[in-house]
Image (tube, rainbow, N blue to C red):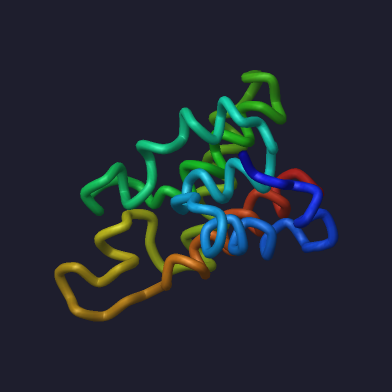
Length: 130
């Protein structure tokens, strides 16, 4: 169980980084946890870390932001918000897929995991603070 009270003074992007760094969350769980604090969603988002476990899928941090968007919008119009989050994240991070972000084929890391987590939270906040 995550003690969210101990993280309450952190900005949301740094809260997500701390959840990943020190609380056993993968990238998707860290973003989902920071934005929702819902234990069931944290569990459900476990399989999305690491580009769905094999670095081939969408960045887990980005997936977490889209999961949180679905909660925020109650599922109404979520694809439109998801597209905006995705484009914001891409402009911040340089790519959408884990293998590209981690430089699996090129050897050049575009965005370390902690920065992907920050960028996903910031992309979410940019979309919903308009």
